[in-house]
Length: 246
Ligand code: GTP
Ligand code: MG
Image 1 (tube, protein in one colour):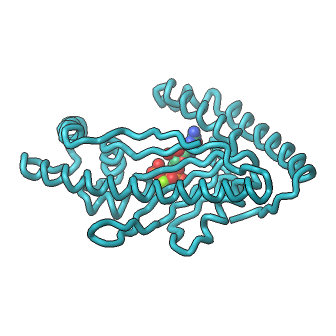
Image 2: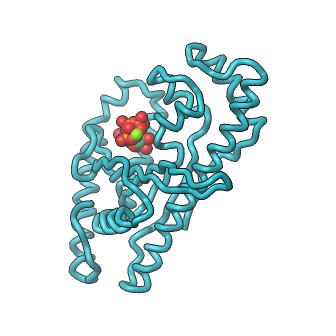
Image 3: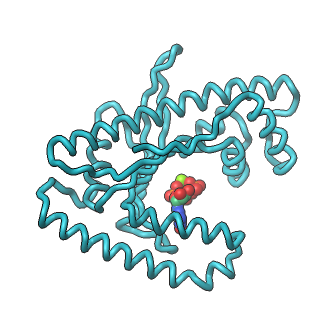
């Protein structure tokens, strides 16, 4: 099952967002006059279409792998997936954070999570099995791996992040496009979703978050221990192949 968290974009949305961005981040170098805005809007729309294509390519590959596991081992490693395209406002925010201009070239060279897929797996073994099977496919390349399962973040956050580059065949030829894939177990996702919302609800007030940081960190650790226990039961009862790293 794939859940699409996609913001539909039209030229009107892009133009409106650009005006909003220019007002809220005046220091960001954005297209200024009507002609520039129109040109950027059209190029941005085309770029997003290519990123959507890349996201579809990778999610289809993941669905095929999940299907094959079901056929071969009567086990679905993937519980469900979520896909989203980063909004123009978030892209602009990320570029502004790094003092970079809002241009097509700047997005292509600096923002690697425009297209994002979250793969929720049943067991930790499934995370590494699916990630390594996908990574081995000859038509895609790995640009970056961050293993926050082996090396959790200070918050307690766990997931395996991989940025893939996939060719998308357009009328103008093939274009390599990056897609960020976050592989995690359903329990890691449960923790990350709640922690993200709690952080957001505290208005990102560091002092209020700090008051509960140890509890959240400990909860992540305990959930991981449960993940490993259930994993062991699954290993004992079901003999699907497993790997411990990517
Ligand atoms: P970005 O500029 O956001 O890409 O930062 P980064 O490259 O240093 O971080 P990375 O790409 O490794 O991870 C960013 C993403 O991981 C976020 O958008 C979240 O989805 C997720 N993430 C990272 N840390 C946490 C965390 O502490 N809590 C939660 N809930 N999610 C996190
Ligand atoms: Mg990142």
